[in-house]
Length: 230
Image (tube, rainbow, N blue to C red; front, side):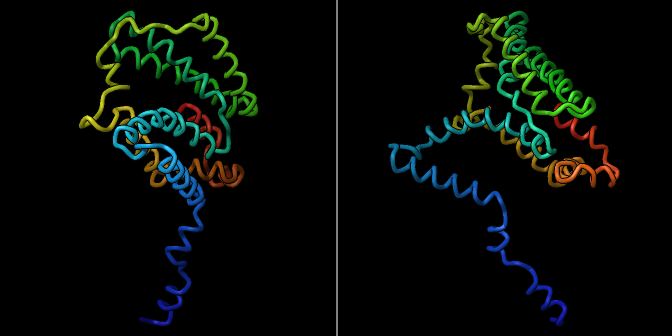
């Protein structure tokens, strides 16, 4: 081995040093502490049934969190996610009740969410309004609209489609909830995009320094607009 190779090898940090340098390590340690605490205080915490139930419930927050994380990485915020979830549930259940079609209901919900994302993204990226103000406003508008339409009462699922029930209660191999499968697939897809695709690198660049990203040739407004749509 040449002297240059030896010097290069010595300059490279060890695996342990690289692990401690990652910010995610603190989150992982917190997760371990939470698992240890509940395993001691709660009986049967590590049972398969409990783990799969927790995984299914956490998948809803994980799915919504993926979109929020992309917006945060781009340097903006979105506090309307909770009201957005309630709002897009309305066209889902209404159209599903009227048509007995899960596909039409889900398509309507996604379209409604897309429209709201376009509004948030346009006002933030192109109109230049602070994203906190924009999403705070849309949050109250959506929440008020849901309250007015429903009268603060739940809308019943009159269709009772087996396919819709399977999304929440169905399990792959009778173990893993389908909602968790969807969330994990989405997480893997977006993780790959953020680490290995040009658009993911653009999001990191825009969030790190908008001016540098603009000088590098990135369309900062377009990147932020797409992040809100996602």
